[in-house]
Structures are given as C-alpha cells and as structure tokens.
Image (cartoon, rainbow, N blue to C red; front, side, top):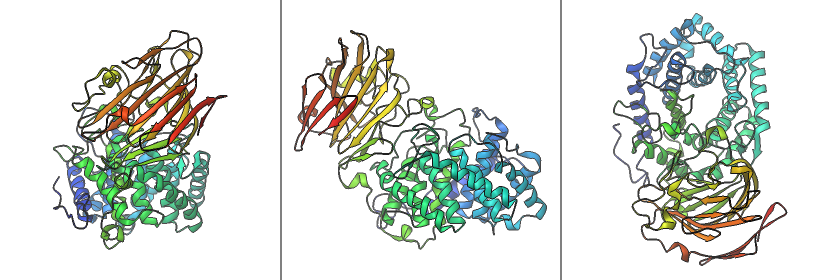
Length: 581
C-alpha cells in the first residue's frame, strides 16, 4: 500500500496524518473493485473459505462493508458504482432480510452509508430504486435479531428509513425496541456486555456504543446524545488504556479480524464532542492502530484485507467469518467524517496512556485489571470477569496483552530472549495463563470477586468439579498469582501456566508456594494454595524477577507481598470472599 511520507512534526509518534488515512481508504477501495460482480451488487473476494451464511450472503457482505468505507471517504466516483450495485441488489440479487440472518447485519452498514451520504447517493437514485431499496431495508424493522449487539441493526436501519419518511411508525418502533433492549446489558462505567452473561470485548465499542451514539447524533436528539454520549465519554477513559505503545489493540475477544475497527470509539468521541481525550491523543491512538496493522501484513499482495490479525490467521476466526468480514475494519475510517481543519487532524500527536507512565488500573464493570509499563509500552489485561465459552481461548484465560496471543493449542512460552530455566519453560507444555486441574485447562462459570488498587480476584469452575479462587496482585511489570483450589480429590495434579511470549519478549513464571520448579503441584486433603511470580516484559535486561517482590505465605489462605520500592499488601481468603489490605 502506497502512503504519503511520514510527517514527524505533526505526528511524532506515528508519522500519520489525515492524508495517510485518505490514502489507505483509497487503496482499499481500489483493491476491492476488481472483485465486484458485473452488476456491482456483490463483491466476491478470493479464497476457498465461506462463512456459514453461504456465498451469496458473503457477496452482500463484501458490498455493504466496502460501501461503508466509500461513505466515510465521501468518494463520489466510488459511490456512483455502489449506486449501480444498490439498484441491482434490491432488484432481486440480494438475499432477503430474515430472522437472525446475516443480511440484517449488512443492512445496517448499507443504511448507515446511505444516511451519511444522502445528497451524494440516495437523493440521486431513481424513485423506483429508492422504493425497492426502502422495501428491502424495511424487512430489518421486524426481523428477529440475535439477543446481542444485533438488536442495534434494526435501530440503524430504522434511523435511516425514518429520515427519508419510510414507514415512520414501524421505524420508530424498531428504534425504540432496540435501544430498550440494550439497557438490559448496560453494566455501568460505560461498559456493556454483548448480550446476557459477561461478554466483554470490542463489541462494546464498535457496536454497543457506535450505533446508539450515531443514531442520537444524526437525529440531533440531545436527550439521547446525553445518555449514550455520556456513556461513551466515560468508557473512553478506560478504553484508551487498551492500546499498547506500538499501537496494538488488546488481543482479546472475538472478531479480531476487524482489526482497526477498534478505533471506532476514539473517532466517535471526537465526532460527537463526547470524549475526555485530547485531540492529539485521539489521533495518536487511532493512527497507531492503523499503522500497527498495515506494517504487519494485514493487507495482502492484492491490496485486500486478509482473514486474520497481522496476516492470515484462522485462530481468530469464527463460523460467521467470510472472505469480506475483515471489511468491518471500514468502521475505523469514521474519523474521515471530521473536516480536515478539525483539531483532531491539526493538533500535534500526544502519547497514549501506555506511553506516559506505569499504571495498574482497576476496571470494576468487567472486573478487569489493566497493567501497563511505559518502558516497553506493553499493556496486560488480567481477566477476572469476562467469559463466553463459545469462543475460548479468547475470553476465558486469566490474562491477555497487546503483544501476545492466546495459545489455542500447546503453547511455547519461551522466546529467544527468555531465560532458559525450568521455571520459565514450564508453561510451554499447555495452554497459557491457566490453572490446569487434573489435566483439564477449562475455566468456566467465572464469578467476579472484586477489583481494586493493584489487585483483582475471581472464582471459577475447573477440571474434576474443583473450584479455583484466583487473585492477581500487580506492580510495575510483576504479577503475583495466587490460586486456592477447593473441591478436588487429594492428590489431584495442578499445573500453573504463564504468558505465551513471542519475539523480543521475556515471559517468566517462578514457583513461590505449593509448586515445584516445573510449576506443578498436587492438592492436599483440603483447600490447597498455589502461588507463582510472573512477568511479561519487552525490556532487554530487566531486574531479576525474584528481586521485584518478596512473597510470604501464612497458613492455608493468607499471602503477604512486599513490592520492591513499593508497599506491602496482604491478601486473605475468608468466607468465600477475598480481602486485600
């Protein structure tokens, strides 16, 4: 992909300016054009993978998601081509929008694009095409959605149809129904779970915030914007911390192939004026993410976005992932709706939170603890509240980071820079960041037990019917991980694993209590405590891990930790709760 020269004066961290975003959008749009059908209603990208919705739906997905990119870019030439495709699509080419069907998702992208570009596209269509398009979209108003972020797709379609005067009563009902539905999943502090349970991931930003905030903004509804914009603003304080110093978003959750769609909440806050972030920091975080992926092979030799994270990677895909799915990354170009003279484009870049200072930040709503170090820009997420067993291992592991990926199969936790010791290599034998009881690495029924200053805790169901109460204490790059195993047969083997590291990273795990040098132990007659010292760092020559903390265990359920150059902390498990003082 050809981009303009870096501008290190305006953008000292990334070199990227608005011109880079425009050039990237133009290149992506040019690359997809050869894969349009003759009538331009479908886009079929190369490869032998189809989603579970089939080739026709996948072709519609290719049209809808790249149309969204053309809409954000306001590319009139491209929009003319998409107008031709729209006319053909609603004349019988596109599949109907039915209950819980993929076309419902794509209808939202089409409706949003039409709303954003009305003078350039919709208003120039023949009346009969407009009527057919409205009728096709109209099925979304009553189609049953899956009980998750899908509830917002009828909201987006209804918002557009209401703006053009189509079925106003049905459109209003669809909007009200969807907005009412997501209230059940709002857990506070700007966080939604994606449906019932505790499914916390990027859908919180690129769906649960995006669609309500845009609906309120585009409808000029100050009451709704105060509600949804206020939640977005609160969320962004936490969200900005999920990006590493190299621009990488946190590697956690599903649909990671959408890549720089992770920038959506950042742009959305600036677009609506509902952000706590300085304009230069907004652009630095967003441009950092775009650059991160473009520099690491997200676009193939044909200029197409691949199914993966950096390059192709089947591990991050789901059954609904088709060849055009990565183009939900188009949402990341939302910032192009901001005019060139907006301060987000003109202010000098400012460093993101991970670059400014070391921080250990509790996030009560998802029951997460974020741990970042400015020396290497690494952000670690200690997960003690998010779970969706359908997508393990991207939800249920104890920890994630901006520089590692979960090991879906036996992982190697030792990079070329890791010390070659038995303790460091112990986690190479099985799933990373897990407590493996009786050979079973499962972690289900996660019950949050709280999060606070430098600590987070939870309880979960493990192998053999055992329960594990886990506490993580964090300071600098160091972690103390304590796991109290209950309900297991005496003599049950237990293995504790740590980070699955990559190039240039040091992953360490040292036994402290209840574990041998290979990080294994066995349960006793009652509750059994296992404690380890862990660290993930990109520093080339860090202080020895054992010198960063002194850990003392008293009795069966009490731990004292004295951090090097820091305070002493006491942790005690009592009456099913965790007390930290």
